[in-house]
Image (cartoon, rainbow, N blue to C red):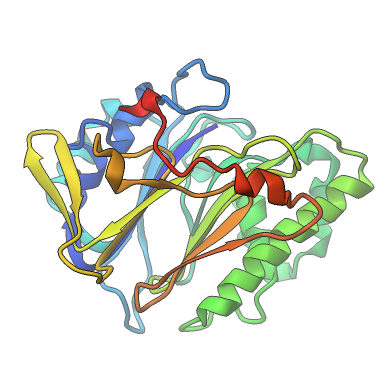
Length: 313
């Protein structure tokens, strides 16, 4: 499994404050991930990708993506770019491959016009449903896919839920509905194929204005891969490597979502409950809603731990 983070802010942030400088930055998570489900702190060294937008809106606001098959901790170009590039919306991903070869085309995130997508987890026994997924796609979306990962094909399935994936803008409800339909369809095909082991579907998508992400597992009893969020008015470095989310008032000027917290400030982070959809609207409202399908378990939701576990501190 992989690690990812996303940032949406009313002002631009220098990428280094997300990628390289925090003591538990996304690059550090590539070699020291502490909250992986397998508990072995394995390496996420099968490439990386960073995607960003120049602004929060505009007709030409399509994302730029830099990806490489080298480990994130050993790429000097990434470190150099992170010190110079600023953006109000950033996706970053370090990869531990579960399907697909080691290639730049298989590195997250991917983009389609204004939309950008990444995934932490895997689609269980993807080979058993791959043909059905491909056959369900419109021609232009089928031809869009360049790699061979379950994650990119899931993006194609998401695009197929949109009446016009090349639209200049999307209502946040439209993106949320497409996300939930994507998960629903994957579950239908898994059931038809007799797949009994769960899929881990921590998906994230943005059009440059809205962000929709999920923490999800196709199981009523097991926990999904870790995912946290933090929000406030300023993400501030108070000493080298140490950051905190400043909450000067009730406004949400910044929202961070990450597989693992970037800071050692326990009060900064809340865990996203298993089988939940998080939406960050263009006006910076953070909406958390349970995904109430056949795998929804109200007792599990009630027992959800909203604090950061000691392993990360």
